[in-house]
Image (tube, rainbow, N blue to C red; front, side, top):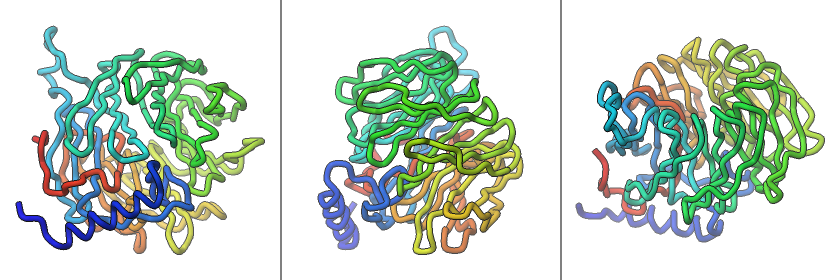
Length: 367
């Protein structure tokens, strides 16, 4: 397909942006630092969703809000019931590298992390770890991938070059998810089985503090781009807790968000930084200011919103609709849904990755 001048211009702009920010090309949005430049939406960007029932990763162009295809990691039921089945089961969690070149996709039922090249949509390697892993993310320097092994009691630390497990960090049983401070100094690990969130010194791989959870079931955790606050959700009680991201890691606020509170993430705009919380039991996304914790919007989005992620410039929030097999795109200026994209079955975690596709017209390895 012929490459347009606009595509060339976008490629040059994106390359310049990434060079300016170094190898860790986070945007000025979560999970990056506020000081990083925003990356305008382009055809080089991709929205990925981990789909638990179809065992696929869907790939969407955010400019057109068009599904480009899926990366098939396994088969749906009943095909995956076979004793000879070798694919992945319950594709669920997802993280991406700071250079935007690799995804780490967690499959709960097959105890695995699958590494995918974002330029080619090709599987690079699958690493098998402990029972029922849940979520994965790269350290901000890109040198490690941390995976919560929720069916056991540890974080699996994987080398993304060799794809081998290098160490384990022992936690209380059932670690739910981890996320890192933008400077890479701390990791925050909430629990799905115990009322405790652990703070880990990343360089030492040691727990240095504990934060009380008001209930045992935390599925999701996120850090504000300014590195000041950690927000985590409590799915069983319908609450969201906020604590200080720096010592003494003290609690700041607990917000009653609603039944089946799933995921939380942030968008930084000219009006401030806002938390977007998916409320599965209400089919809504609720929006809160991070400075005074006031609720500023309630957005109807569709059946059972789950994962949530901002675009590289904070102008869009993407939400996975678990029971609608779709993505909802939210305009953060108006806090309204501007598009719905049919994708795979039962999306869980999602990720918006700026500049994931060097060639925006390439569809290789997509079905």
